[in-house]
Length: 497
Image (cartoon, rainbow, N blue to C red; front, side, top):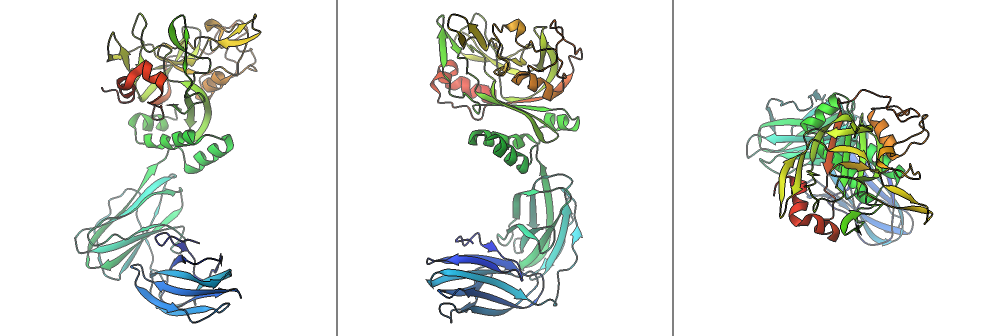
């Protein structure tokens, strides 16, 4: 039940609606008729409740009123309707409290909706003539789930046409509607659609006459709304992480991503600022800035066949020391890049980013550059074991521009850079990075033999597409401000000063 005049609740013909009222106000409903004839609008309150009933047309012109009854007395309106007519109803509270039943009843018979003409997704359909009061019906089936726009374009300034979209049948769920006025496009925008379902489009001439064009376009989604909602719910993601999953679909029309999907390659998204430790400060070691043990501020996810097959909130797209070293460390600029399978430092499976755009800091300023050594690899030296302290303490994540994934689930004593992925031969000691590598399909669970020799030799081929996105970085974070400055933070996002 809606209190919003502009967003009334739909009720179906011959299908009563039951609600409750206890306070003054208007309660808005609507319905639409698929045949002509005499309709009966009726609201029946319980014994302690009194209500009034009003019906209006689409332009809020009053069609009829019933206010004759008292508490427990029904209000009834009979009104002749035409095919496609849209009626707004107001169940207005008068006194008392209790429940009510609202119904729109109509006997079968009369004129029915004509057959619909099929149109194709994204086709430019030829102009069609229409006059005031006429209705034209179309339907479309989409090949893929997505979000679709449905629109009608009047071809002269005097013609006013309305559009209504239904799911499944001409009497099904209303997907959306639009009625803007003479000469204006009407658009039902970004509505979730399912593959194989018929969507019916009604074009009605409201005033004037002339030609119009009708069209619909399905914008393919990388992740469906259902996939995002269920993943967020089942994995208890934060609101920022949910927003990041929604943002995935903004990349659907990127050419590299289209190619990756067509070739069934995985998509690897890094969203800096959405990770576990997005606000962790740098520590100081030997007078130099460094990240702490928990400096992972990005999420990383792998998508294949429109499903999330890997997710971690312990990743990073930022180097340990972006400036202040003896040579200028690269920071990869936000963008879409292909990746090759690779051996990181000749030791374990990793992924090399092809021709990334990077920025570097010289003596006084940031500048454009390139790099041939940007990898996606494990954040080795994430832990070191201190016997004296009987526990783990922080060490370098060891990124000189590479993108990192934590090894937090593969904690061992004395993990070093040369042995950071030293899994058991049977793969039982799998950590975050191990699962990441498996999700991309580079190796199976037996990555290493007992002496650490790599089994899989199929390297240096394109394995997927990586997307670096820092939309959620807190640009006011004092640590990042000190490391990059305002110019550097903008530069890494856009690749331009």
